[in-house]
Length: 246
Image (tube, rainbow, N blue to C red; front, side, top):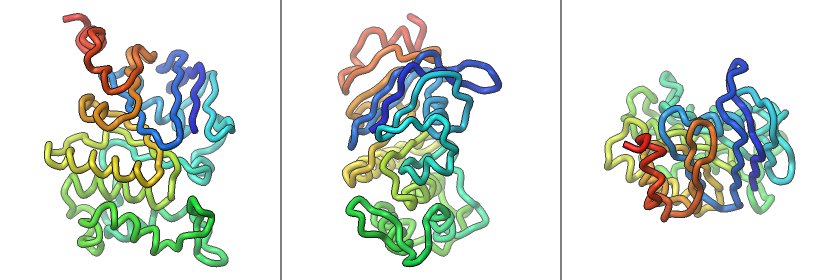
């Protein structure tokens, strides 16, 4: 579904990623882990065209998307949930979800594509999100600023799911949440994936991310240092990558 070849990217002419290669197959969860400053979030921002691309290719469903603007990437089937539980605090839960539907063509039948080519009305997409996150249904008339941190994270993910993505980019979804809520968020990510959505997750909670991932890439200093399956945390080189050999 997604192939990244020899990617070099960064910000304001400062190169952060140095020749990164990465692959996501349809239906996979891929985890990106590594120490702070390794370039994990920059991988997601490169895919979503939120940073400068200096060279390389990003191929999504056999098309190079490097030069596509972000709004077109949403139409292509990619959605992005940035870190920090970014919600529209002065809007209700339902209004936040409706904001995620801006890319949906409302004419002539208020429908949007689904995997069968039939079509979802916006209300059906919202219902689908409520099936993943029942607490959002219970609180749909609440203002977003009244939600707990975990509920705001669910709302952020739900708003991205309204766009009916084929590939979901998640940046630190467990950041600042209690262990109980973190467990729930990761369970929801697995449920979303089982519905056919491929996922790339950037996480500091390495163990949790690797547990749910089909494949894991470990970044160090803007390069892929290791890649593998769930056994990767047993690799002796992990200590050097995270702790500099201490």
